Length: 25
Image (cartoon, rainbow, N blue to C red):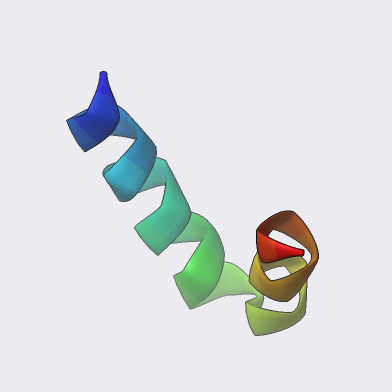
């Protein structure tokens, strides 16, 4: 669900900001 995606995004964001930027691109 969308909420699950938000939680996963937050977890990734907390672990590695660089990875988050790659997923955003």
